[in-house]
Image (cartoon, rainbow, N blue to C red; front, side):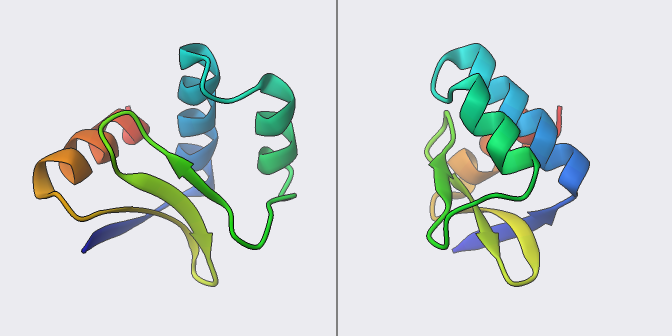
Length: 77
């Protein structure tokens, strides 16, 4: 499994991207940005990887290297 920790700023940008795509509501994004995330927080990204919260911070994970790289680039853009 591939994974990369991302900064809070990158996490916030990725949430904005998900709101623009219509896969996340604006109210949920505001809640997540303020640090209110469920224990099992995990969001599916457009290419199949997931963004989740871990004890070390926010991370993007994916099993498929191509999907992982595509979603990482997408989230960091």
